[in-house]
Length: 153
Image (tube, rainbow, N blue to C red; front, side, top):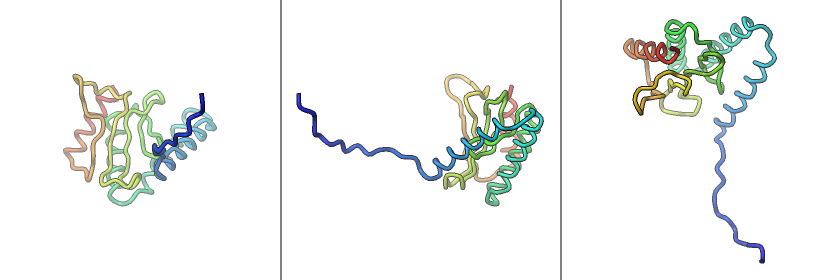
């Protein structure tokens, strides 16, 4: 049989610049984590990296990220702050449970607070895993605290 000479017109899907940057950040995070010494040193460095990343954010995102950082630490002290794809995240036994994604990260119109599959939020056959945030109220902070406590449980 003769080889087909038909051309495909299917467009190749590529990552955006922001997605590629996030993947590069994650690779750097993994390399940095592998180089660190004691567990205490690693935890202190991870928290410092999260605080530094939050400080780099634009004003509205930074204010929300600072409040979320405080709420997560108060609600689930067992979760360890760490960077995850260049975003503040909180892990249990090395697995990310929840994370904050600033609106500026992917040029979105809202920030996101989300949970990974390690979060113990299962409720029936469907439950929310991410929330859009434009600002934080006291009620929002209380709800996030409850969800984080449950997720870390």
